[in-house]
Length: 261
Image (tube, rainbow, N blue to C red; front, side, top):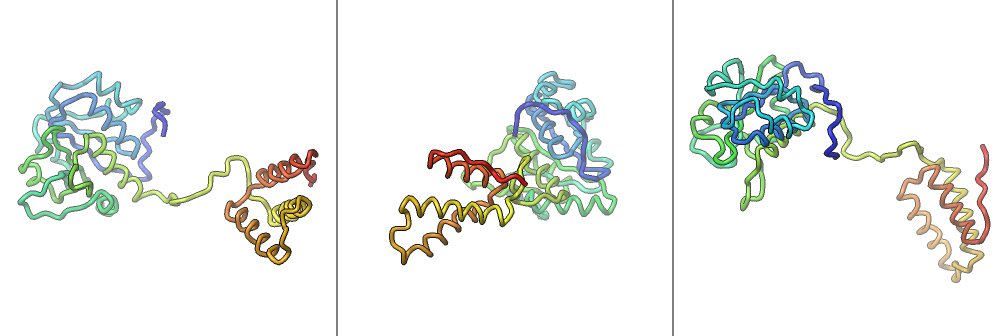
């Protein structure tokens, strides 16, 4: 997760009309820029600003967007919330506080699939964020179809604007991509074959035997199993097997010459 900007591309995970982000009375250009950066991280490109305090365009916003120029350059400014929301079919509003209105309440994780399902029906949707200092007001909640609340430490739920945008954007993006929760980064290597690992074990056990490691013969089978379990849990690569065999030979003062296939 580098801070070095990369070439920005408006990838939207195959979605024609990704969610619109609406910032109500954003106070600092810095925060708008950071929110724009978080948007483009998650394939969101439609930014709408309602009465930005420091005016628009804003140099600080551009600087803090860190290359998310497509979001900043195409941002639209409105004097009224009603105009910013006019073309949307469904609106979600983010808030950390419980309000009196009876509304459906989503977490960001629940909102991601919800937004994708509604967009799949042809709806155009938006997520509304309030001013940094106060958050949304009751009239904003009244404009929305549902509320989004992030389940955080009840003793401290405060988020800055970019954090809030990123949480919503991240769950939106994750709901549309198929990325495994875990994978092994192999780089240019590849898994060792069973034969390579078995030859390494035979080599290692021979050298351990020569060094007197298996002093109690009755315990030898269990010790050998334990050694094999240690290495088998790792999931050795071809290069790692070669390195281990080289280490074994080096400890004997020799030089390992891997078998040529």
